[in-house]
Length: 157
Image 1 (cartoon, helix red, strand yellow):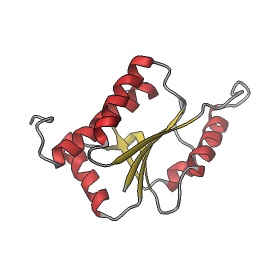
Image 2 (image 1 turned 180 degrees about the vertical axis):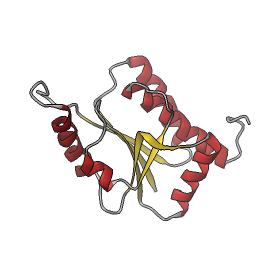
Image 3 (image 1 turned 45 degrees about the vertical axis):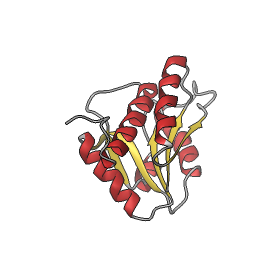
């Protein structure tokens, strides 16, 4: 199975990119992991929030197949401890999926069409983080989930 993190817009902070790459590289020892960036929309001054969400939603949905399991990283999603998140990942691994896609939306969230297509929603916290920071937090938590599943000493109870 491939696990993919799909994001709207690039990370412009070199330091964040370096940290994300550390965890991305570590994840390769456990599972195929990719990060795919959908470029920011151009000329958004004339778009309201809903129009921007709709356009971003079309781009997100164009990157998915019907067979993909789509998980939105959403503030209203289910919250997990690191141990429970590792169990969530294990269930997806056991299910025989070809591709598990986690999505970080744009600044205004997801369109109704993306919510309707989603198989699940996960919240990293009740706090609000920048979309750039969420990439790092998610990638680290995914790495942590695999170390928990392998009983490695990275995670301390």
